[in-house]
Amino acid sequence: MNTKRLYIATIVSICLILVVSMFAVIPKADAATTNLKVTANALNIRSMPNTSSKVLLSVKKNTTVTKLSKSGNWYQVKYKNVKGWASAKYLKTVTPTVSTASLTSKIVTSKTDNLNIRQTNSAASKSLGKLNKGKTATYIQQKNGWVKIKTASITGWVNATYVTISNKNSTASKPKITNAKENLYFVVNANSLSVRSEPSSSSKKLDYVYKNESLQISRIASNGWVEVTYQTGKKGWVSGKYGTQKVKEPTTSSITVVVPEETTYYYVTERTGLTMRDNYSASAESLGQDVPFETKVQILKQASNGWIYVSYNDVEGWINGSTYYGFASTADISFTASVPSKTQYFVMKSSTLNVRSLPTTAAPSLGKVSKGNFFKVLRVSNNNWVEVQYNSKQKGWISANTTSSKITTKKPTTTVSDSVKGSLAGIKIVIDPGHGRQDSGASGNGVVEKTLNLKAAKAIQTAIENVDGTVYMTRTTDNQFLTLDERAGYAKQKGANAFISVHHNSGPSSATGYESYYSTSARVSSAKFAEAIHEGIKDAIKEEYPSYSDRKLKKVDYYVVRYNSVVSVLLELGFVSNSSDAKLVNSDHYRETVAEGVVNGLLAYYGRD
Image (cartoon, rainbow, N blue to C red; front, top):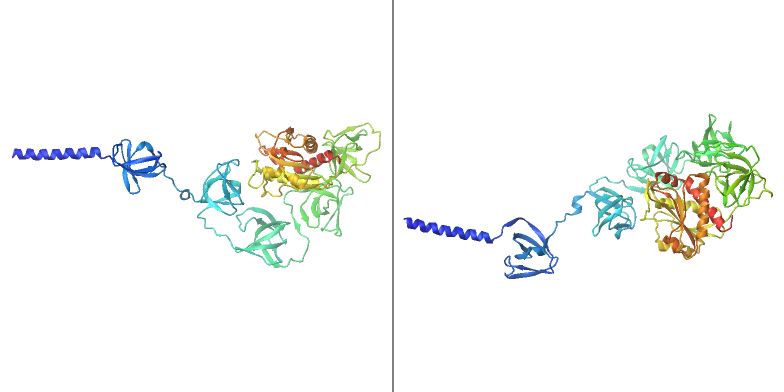
């Protein structure tokens, strides 16, 4: 009996030893499977976790295999239908990827064609592809004015200025829009009605229209909104429930009356003053009140025939707002003037200056005076302008704030010269508004350089054309773009005489002022040309902005001036990174001042002054 029990116990012990030995050889399975990538040029998969075992197959570099388990420095893996062992030092764990689309509920829509998708969030980085207007992509993240997106084939960054971001699951449906019938007009019934950018009360407000205004309808939305022309060349949407639609324009009056978009003043330069009337017509009844010479009145309403509604001396009425009798300006101009105690003479020493209807650069120019002209001083203003008898019939004001002139009590030895009205007839100038389309340039304090450049360039274009010069623009909208090569070669293409590139600067928030550049390595010498333009701008700015910093004319080999075929200059008109500069350079007054300076410089350079 004892012998039998001993035999059974021995058999059981042997079995337990065999089982334990078996588990010592079989590795412990991992809790989860993982994908591994082969890092060797070729990796053997073997029958056991050692180099002496049989090779089942060999896999190439970058092949992905599935991890089943681990034993020491070996992984048990599966590749296709084969299971085996491979050395762990030649396998790298593949980080699982998560679909971006599953992580975001937003989409990005391009507002422009050919929007660059860049490698990093920088305009200087490599373009990976384009996103056209209306096309969408998956939103990933937003950083420093850039949006990271994913299309079907590209992941990269786009400038946030040119896209809209919306929710994928947005169910808001847009109203159906159809074209209106011809001669369909909308007559406003409300006292004032908002004009908006889209047919929705939540869209951007563009302006107001007022009771009884008759506005042509161009399109109608299914939600009751109508698109109207509310100013020349401007369209917007108004709610149809606040007006009446009529076929053919109402014939009650062909003259429309509007309220100015912003506070605007009218300055009377007619020496006899202007009579106030009870309607916008010279035949209307006089109210017995005149608005005197050199008086400032706020424009309360404007009629389309040029008459303006104002208040003066507690009387409200209409006066003729023609530029023949004065000028309108958003600038709040005030001045005092006195007759000098001794006879004085204003003498032009150099350059060219404007003669204006009032002592400010906001006033229209009556003509120009230049070197050799001199006049008896009639009055001196508190901002250091002098009134002179500009010609036999007309008086005008000239700034005495520049180095171009002097005031003396010594009477000139010759008679007063007639003023010279310069002309650039026959001179062709290329104006290059820097940047454009996808290249916005610098930005800050609510302004974007490409837009500022275009506005300043157009002001210069107008000023040159006003003295009969010819202007070629490298771009006329913010959606156009030329490469540096194309810009530099534009003057040769057009047969132009000179090239002016217009820019705005960026730097530390304390940086301020304007400056100009020319190249010493250019094909032609531009030193004298650039100096004439810079001096013209400096004198013009000093008239109205005597404290604004002149950062001087500098020699720098910027591409568009270095590789130009004609005399050229690059202008930096102020810093968008400085809040005060940004406000200044974004004003029409400043742009017009710069434009006059450019013209004066051109007149001096070409001997037309």
